[in-house]
Image 1 (cartoon, helix red, strand yellow):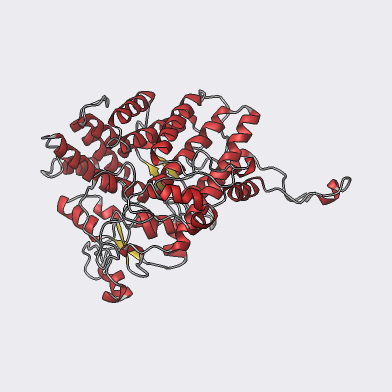
Image 2 (image 1 turned 180 degrees about the horizontal axis):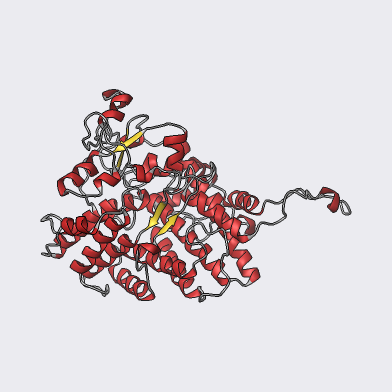
Length: 490
């Protein structure tokens, strides 16, 4: 994709520039009084948050979430049009996700950073940077090499951006998050009085999110560069990550027709029940007597039992009415108009710290203690009672058994996979990094192996061919689903 087009499209959206005269002396005549020549930073931020996370092609939206990253970790299963469940991708969807993230929120956040520099508001610049790095991580974790250092440079003449290697992208993201965290000024400094749909302008929470995201990124590269992973993780933890569920990074929706959770729009407004809960997670939760099962899924209508669908089953194997009646639908807690999209949770941070402790790093506690705290935080997040939490933690297959490092990691990773339900981008990335749980290949799969990445959109192959070719040359097997990412070594 030509990034100059993306930058200009995003800038036009963010700044909403009205028509202006071409001839001197006609400026006042051609100014539209109903369209502002610039948009306040809070509106740019709100638009960037919604388009990056929600909507049709955001990280937790309909096509990137429901139709892809919620399915491949086998949290959900498709009951109709289930090409993605069988690892067959729609080129238009890949193109639209790529276009949306680059030309929408990333372009708008660049504008926001420029405006913050002009107005000397470092808190606003820091928020824009943190959200930008989150988007870049989603992009690189799903494609591999991506335009990063030269992305969004069309206005400066960079019309054919190079693809940075994933190692380079990770080095850049970690560095920028550390700088953004340090840049945030104390309470009282100007941030966002309105328009912040994630933290309502609370800069301390943004600082904790920056450090928590840095911990996530550090752990992602542990199998490739363990020394750097440890250094970055310990520095981020010392700087201060999430301390409770009140710190969770999530996009909050409203009840208005244009501000509702995109899942609510699909399931309720459009009455499209194209998904049920996957057999894999339902059977796992049942085997553990996990109280989150009643939150994650609704019982089948026919007999009141919790029953998941095997991923990849052909729609003809079950008629849609039978599927809706005989299998568990997504829990109602995730389908209301105001159900938030979880970007990063306190429980995830605790699982990261538990893994760090199991590896012998400074994690502010031991692995067993942090594991119990992580499971507890996830259960509390979903409203599970204290008595039920205590009972669950005492179950033989849930209680932390210790043992070898490998055994400890497997137990941590399994519970983390459970806790990441409906946070598709992170769940899919962690399944590939940890190979936990050991997922069965989808039925009727079009690929012989579990997909390791997404395919580049067509425009990169045509409009940025030289750089695309260089990037593909670094992937084993080329631009294919089975090509492992740099950090994926298992």
